[in-house]
Amino acid sequence: MNEFETLREYNEVWDNQRLFTACVEMMLWYHHEDSIDGEQGQPALLHTYQTMVGAIRDRANFFSKSESTNRRKIKKDSYDLMPYSMSLTQKSSLGPTNQITFLQGGAEDESDVFFDMHQTSCGYIRFGLSMEEVIADPQKYLDLCLNAAAELKFQSGIAGFSMNYEDVYINGQENLTMPIIARFKGVNVSHAWRYRTMDGIPTVNWLTFVNTETIERLGGLAALKAQVSGGVRIHPLKHGAVFQAGPRPLMGDVNRQEKLDDYYRVGKLLAPAKSTVEIDSNIAGDMTESTKWVNRFFEPAA
Picture 1 (cartoon, one colour):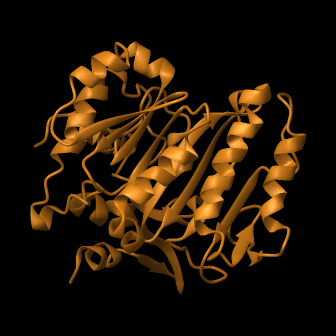
Picture 2 (tube, rainbow, N blue to C red):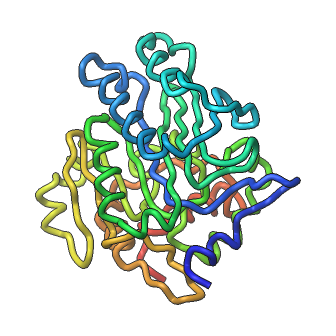
Picture 3 (cartoon, rainbow, N blue to C red):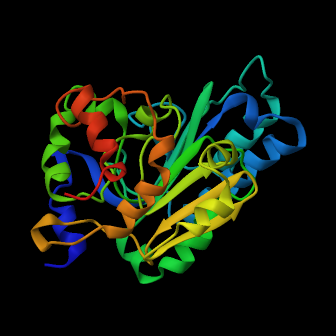
């Protein structure tokens, strides 16, 4: 059994629906007011939108403007809904569409090829690809992620192995993620919605997006580059930088004794700026244990 199938064994089916599925996911969080700040705002968010959607556009067949329980077949103008809404968005109000999802698959199942965006006071934008596609060419995926974040004034973000799910499905059944947490240290299992209200750096993964304000708080980019070791790389962006933990994402499968040394190296660099807010989730039992889990790479490797 290959590494992808070991993680797919944890894809969860509930009441004949695949509730979550293994993938490689990128997610960014941003503040609403930053996303509409004149020439540096909406065009930047639109660039992120177009880059992420472009990665899955030729494969998606369903979309939804609310929770993905209300999916419809993609039409010719479906991809124009969010850009049109952005054009009407103001600081005091959102446009007519503030959430949209595109995905490949069935009318109800969760997919490993998807795009999802939610505009709120602190919103998120994310997309996923199959594990095989990313691992076949990690550099191509890295370039895609760097391009997606190239202009956006983001709050923070991550990319790496993940489990895609619609938050409404799992709410109240978060214990379903416990076996994944126990075995795969490098796999994110928390939905983007849960991270959005955490301050500082909420968590670390293969790619960790750190904004300019946080980098300055950590002593500046030059000082951070001087501390880099192992396979860690830092990629400057217009509004921050991306910290890359090794040449490709890893699952950290404890059954295979797969080490995540570079993930911990990134965590050590960024630990002084980790979030001081608990995650609003019970994925690891309760909020306190769940927060320890999202902070796992800020502590020394066990």
